[in-house]
Image (cartoon, rainbow, N blue to C red; front, side, top):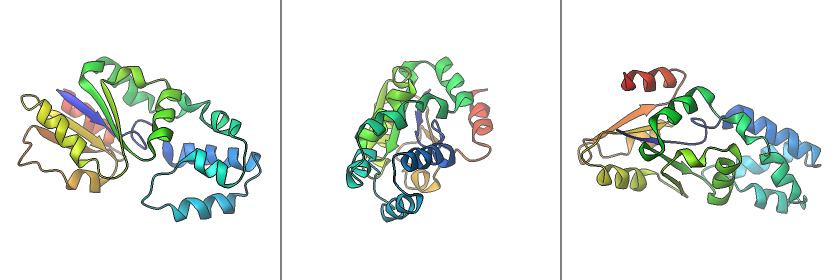
Length: 180
């Protein structure tokens, strides 16, 4: 079996824990919370780049490292324990967003060595998920994501080896049940 994990809100507690950490850190850097909210609202559907954001408000880029410094605290430890047991050769990350920011969060969280491949896409995950399914056509591929739209647009007829799990409030239990 191969496993594909989304990063934000599955492996990494982005909402609300990391976002609150981000807001507090940006306030310490001198950016009012309302400005942060207004800017992030304007980015709906686009990848967020923390470096671009800091540059926009003329904040020293040292804050970038400061904000990401404790990223390991935001890892979903219950899920990560299982991933370590599954083994690197069986695990992938396919994440949406700004590539540099996503890869930096993953690296600072200390989990990159546990995944065979980490792929960051600027738009739909569909193509990358289907490539992994095609590469492992003789194995079951499990894709875990917290957004239903990322699960609904996949071609389950063309890739019968693909199974999806919506990572909601019962996500960990759903995931554990397929491992039994």
